[in-house]
Image 1 (cartoon, rainbow, N blue to C red):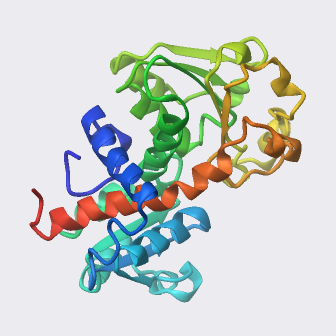
Image 2 (image 1 turned 60 degrees about the vertical axis):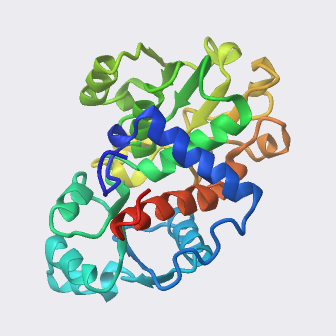
Length: 308
C-alpha cells in the first residue's frame, strides 16, 4: 500500500491487492502460518456505528496473530457522549494501541483521524464513503471463484450510499473487469464516483433492471437498501424491496455465477438462494479473517519498522 494507513481503495494498486491476497490464501490454507507473529501488539476497535462481521473478524484476526484487542465500546458509554471530538479520541487511543480500526458515520472521518496519529488507521467504513478492507475480502472471494481478469461484475442495490460498492468499483479498475451497475434512478452511483471511475478508465454501464444483464455476469454483488442513510423515511419506502432475487430469478444466470453480499441482508436475497451453488456470501464473510490477518500483519510490520 502507498501509505501506512488504509483509508480508501484508491490506495490499492493491483500489486498491493495481489500481494495481500496471496498472503491471505496462504493463511487460509494454513491457519497457523501467522499465529502469534504479533504477540504483544494491541489493536484498538473504535466503532461509532454498529458492526458484527467487520468488528468480530478484525478481533478474530488480531487474536490469531497473537495480538490483543481493546474496544472503545458503544458511543453511549464513551467520552464521545460527553462531546469529545474524534481528533481527541484517536489521539488518546493512540497511546494505548499499535493500530486503530475505525468505523464512523461521517464520510472523511478516517482521513481526519489519520492526520492526528502515527499508528496505522484502518477505515472500517466512513458513512457513505469507503470500506477498503471489505473490498479486499470481496476481491479474495472473487479471485478464489473466478480470478480477477476477463470478468463481468454486476453490482446491484444501493449504489448511492453503499460504501462497499464505491470501494469495490474503484478497486476493480485495476483489473480487466467489466462493471454493470443496477439500481433505481434515485440510488445511482454518485456523480463523483462515476467521474473517478471514468478517470480510471472504467466504462460505467448503468441499468434499472437486472434481467437484461444477468446472463452475462460472472459475479452479482447484491447490497441492501440502507435505511439508516436516507435523510427522508418516505424516500426509503419508495425503493425498499424493489431489488430482490430468489432462486427463480437465477434460473436465467450462467451456471457459474457467484452471488455475493457484504451482509447484513434484509429481503434483497431470498433464503432459497442459500441452497443454490451460486451463493457465496457466507464464504465471503468468513474470508474476512484470513484477509484481515494478512492486512494487519503487513501494517503492523510496517509500523514496527520491520518491512522487508
